Image 1: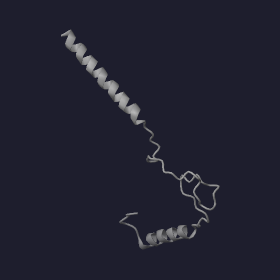
Image 2 (image 1 turned 90 degrees about the horizontal axis):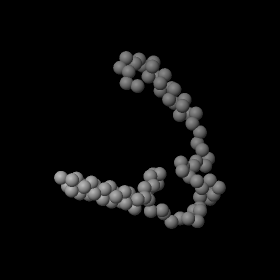
Image 3 (image 1 turned 135 degrees about the vertical axis):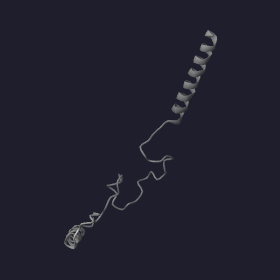
Length: 89
Protein backbone atom coordinates (compact mmCIF):
# COMPACT_ATOMS: atom_id res chain seq x y z
CA UNK A 1 0.00 0.00 0.00
CA UNK A 2 2.89 2.35 0.59
CA UNK A 3 4.44 1.84 -2.81
CA UNK A 4 6.43 4.97 -3.55
CA UNK A 5 6.69 3.96 -7.20
CA UNK A 6 2.91 3.71 -7.64
CA UNK A 7 1.52 5.51 -10.64
CA UNK A 8 -1.74 7.41 -10.75
CA UNK A 9 -3.22 4.56 -12.81
CA UNK A 10 -2.35 2.04 -10.08
CA UNK A 11 -3.94 4.27 -7.43
CA UNK A 12 -7.07 4.73 -9.55
CA UNK A 13 -7.33 0.96 -10.10
CA UNK A 14 -6.96 0.27 -6.36
CA UNK A 15 -9.64 2.86 -5.64
CA UNK A 16 -11.98 1.32 -8.23
CA UNK A 17 -11.42 -2.18 -6.77
CA UNK A 18 -12.15 -0.88 -3.30
CA UNK A 19 -15.31 0.87 -4.45
CA UNK A 20 -16.49 -2.32 -6.22
CA UNK A 21 -15.96 -4.28 -3.01
CA UNK A 22 -17.92 -1.71 -1.01
CA UNK A 23 -20.74 -1.72 -3.56
CA UNK A 24 -21.01 -5.52 -3.45
CA UNK A 25 -21.62 -5.59 0.31
CA UNK A 26 -25.14 -6.51 1.40
CA UNK A 27 -26.78 -5.50 4.65
CA UNK A 28 -28.12 -8.36 6.77
CA UNK A 29 -31.77 -8.07 7.69
CA UNK A 30 -31.31 -9.60 11.16
CA UNK A 31 -27.61 -9.59 12.08
CA UNK A 32 -26.57 -11.74 15.01
CA UNK A 33 -23.70 -10.84 17.24
CA UNK A 34 -21.00 -13.43 17.96
CA UNK A 35 -21.94 -15.51 20.98
CA UNK A 36 -25.65 -14.75 20.64
CA UNK A 37 -27.25 -18.03 21.72
CA UNK A 38 -30.78 -16.61 21.76
CA UNK A 39 -31.51 -17.56 18.14
CA UNK A 40 -35.13 -18.67 18.61
CA UNK A 41 -36.27 -15.46 20.27
CA UNK A 42 -37.14 -13.10 17.40
CA UNK A 43 -38.36 -10.31 19.71
CA UNK A 44 -34.97 -9.97 21.42
CA UNK A 45 -36.58 -10.40 24.81
CA UNK A 46 -34.55 -11.76 27.74
CA UNK A 47 -34.73 -15.51 28.05
CA UNK A 48 -35.65 -15.72 31.73
CA UNK A 49 -32.15 -15.83 33.23
CA UNK A 50 -31.29 -12.15 33.25
CA UNK A 51 -29.10 -12.19 36.36
CA UNK A 52 -25.49 -11.49 35.39
CA UNK A 53 -23.01 -14.21 36.32
CA UNK A 54 -20.28 -12.63 38.45
CA UNK A 55 -17.30 -13.34 36.22
CA UNK A 56 -15.87 -12.13 33.00
CA UNK A 57 -16.79 -14.38 30.07
CA UNK A 58 -13.32 -15.12 28.73
CA UNK A 59 -13.49 -18.88 29.01
CA UNK A 60 -10.99 -18.77 31.84
CA UNK A 61 -12.65 -20.65 34.71
CA UNK A 62 -10.14 -20.89 37.55
CA UNK A 63 -11.26 -22.12 40.93
CA UNK A 64 -9.68 -19.70 43.39
CA UNK A 65 -9.98 -22.15 46.30
CA UNK A 66 -8.07 -24.86 44.44
CA UNK A 67 -5.33 -22.39 43.52
CA UNK A 68 -5.02 -21.20 47.11
CA UNK A 69 -4.89 -24.80 48.37
CA UNK A 70 -2.14 -25.61 45.85
CA UNK A 71 -0.07 -22.63 47.02
CA UNK A 72 -0.60 -23.61 50.65
CA UNK A 73 0.56 -27.17 49.97
CA UNK A 74 3.62 -25.91 48.08
CA UNK A 75 4.49 -23.66 51.00
CA UNK A 76 4.09 -26.52 53.48
CA UNK A 77 6.32 -28.77 51.35
CA UNK A 78 8.96 -26.02 51.21
CA UNK A 79 8.91 -25.65 55.00
CA UNK A 80 9.21 -29.44 55.45
CA UNK A 81 12.19 -29.66 53.08
CA UNK A 82 13.91 -26.74 54.81
CA UNK A 83 13.42 -28.29 58.28
CA UNK A 84 14.72 -31.65 57.07
CA UNK A 85 17.88 -29.97 55.70
CA UNK A 86 18.40 -28.17 59.03
CA UNK A 87 18.03 -31.45 60.98
CA UNK A 88 20.62 -33.21 58.81
CA UNK A 89 23.24 -30.48 59.40
